[in-house]
Length: 276
Image (cartoon, rainbow, N blue to C red):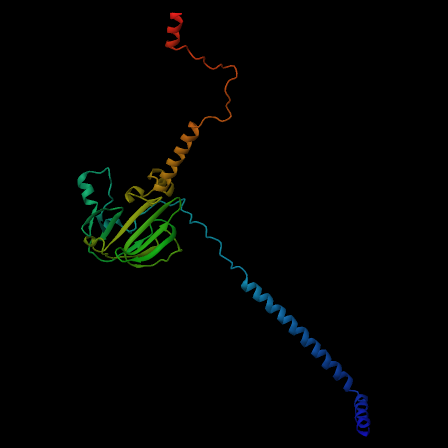
């Protein structure tokens, strides 16, 4: 009993001191504030996790390069400084010209789908973009060397190969005259030496690059032959139109006033009537 009285007396004496109650209040307030901050930090962490686990934000597709005021140029700076070591195979050309447009590879004769330029002294040279566009292919091929393809819109694509190095990457937007890479040699056309192979395609069909020079994308799309896919689509549309035209009109009803033709008497009935 004495111990309980002594402890209660100590507590009473302690509470009589002025600094005790403020200290208790401060301690309680600090504890309450710590609890609130802890709960709030937990909510913030959950929000961050929700944001990070949400759907990935994708960048908006880049707008196509404006080539309205551009016309195609050759992929070399000055044509006079280069030899044309390969020409485009034209089915309407003379036999000797077609022979010059043939590439001999692996015991096969292959039609050249572009033109080839080589420096007169067989040294490497920079290859430039013939028109602004988006790089859709930038890779190394075991036969063709480094290959770059650029999309100019309206189905028009330029192709550059036999490069020893590249200065662009896939997805990059480039301007007319930008250096794409450096010309080199390849295993496909060894006779051409150090050169660049250049093609112009409309909907996947190769056209003569010399016909595209100083022309716009719209001009090429107008005179170039249609791609295989478009030709198939046109043929399918024609077939569908023909089938629609040949179908009888289901809404058309036979004329009520039109009487069915009566069966004409057969020759046998005529004979029977004559006998009688």
